[in-house]
Image: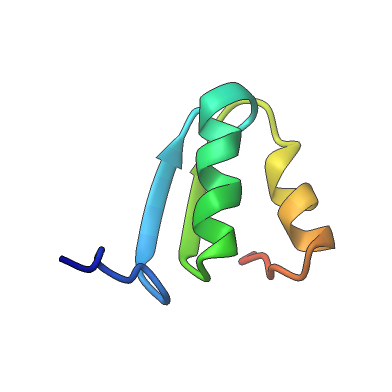
Length: 57
């Protein structure tokens, strides 16, 4: 069985500022998902923006 494609899917990642949450966000970004990142630490979104992601206001 082939895994489900997450390209273009909206994905909420909690704890995205560090550790497993950040790794999860980076993997979904690599798979071209649309991400909502939730964390008190705001470093992952700029990291993804530098890799070509876009930010919502």
